[in-house]
Image (cartoon, rainbow, N blue to C red; front, top):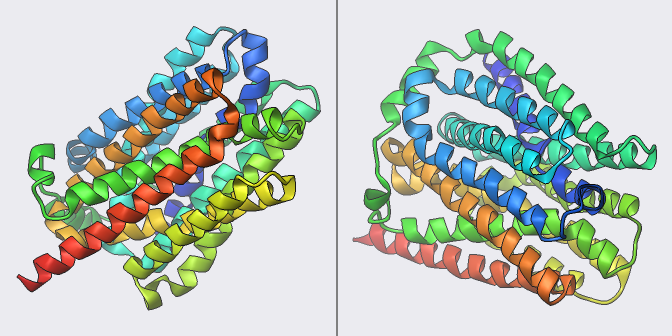
Length: 387
C-alpha cells in the first residue's frame, strides 16, 4: 500500500508540471491569433501565480480540514477544467478568467504534496518526485509543438493536456483510500498555525523566502520567455523554439533523477550550493552569441536548478521544526509564486520596451541573488545551532 501511494504521488507530480510550460511554448502563435502584445503573456502568468499565492497561504487550514489526498484530487480537477477553458477561449480576457481556477488549484496541491513528502519520505524521493514534475513540464511543449506543426492550433495543445489532467483527476479520486488515516493524522498533528508575521521572525526564514522568490523568478522567466528569445533573437521558427523550450525542463528532469541517487549521501545543503553554481555557468553560456551554446546553456541551467527546489523543501522540517513545516511550506510556496507573479511580466515589459535579448542577463541577476540568500541561510542556521 505504501509503495502504491508513492506511485500516486509521483503521478500527481506529473500533473503539477503538465500545464506549466504550455503558455511559453504557445504564446508566439497565440498572441498573433488573439491580437495581443508580446508582454501580455506576463499578465496571464501573473494572474495564475496570484491565485497560487492565495491558495498557498490558505493551504495549512485547508489541508488540516480536508487532508492531502482530497486537496490533491480537487486541485488537479480545477486545473483540468481551467485548461479546457483555455482551449475554448477566443479572446484574451477569457484566458484571464480561466487562469483564476488554474492558479487556485496549483497552489494548494503544491503546498500539500511538498510538505507531505518532506515529512514522510527521504530527500531522494523528494528529488525523484520533482523529476516527475519536470517530466510533465517537458512533455507538454512537445504536445504543443506537435499540434502546431500539424496545423491543429494552440487550442488543440491545451485541449490535449486538459484531457490528460481529467484522467489523472479520476485516478486520484480512486486513490483516496490509499491516504492512510495514520499518515494523515500525523501530518495534521505536525501542522502548526504559523502566521506570516510569526514566520519571518523564525531565524533564517527571511533568507529562505528570498531564495524561493529568486528561484521561481528565474525558473518561470526562463520557461515563459525561452521561445520568444529564441524566435526574436536567435531567429528560429516557433515550432523549433517550442521544442527547444523543453530543453530547459529536460535538463531539470534529468538532473533531479540523478540528484535522487546522491542527495541522501551529500545532504541538502551541499546539493543546493552545487546546483546554484551550475545554474550560474549555464546562464553565462545562454548569453553567448552562438546558438548551440545558448541551447546548451538552457539545458545546463535546468540541470543546476534540479536539486535546489526539492532540497530546500525537504530541509524545511529539519531547519525550522516539523510543527512549523506545513505552514512554512505554504508561506514558502507563496514567496516562490511572488517571484512567478511579478518577475516574468516585468521581463515582458523590459523585452517590449528594450529588447528580449536581455533574457540571459535577467536570469543572471536572480542566480546571484539566490546564491547570496542560501549562503546567508546556512550561516544563520549554524549560528542558531551553536547558541
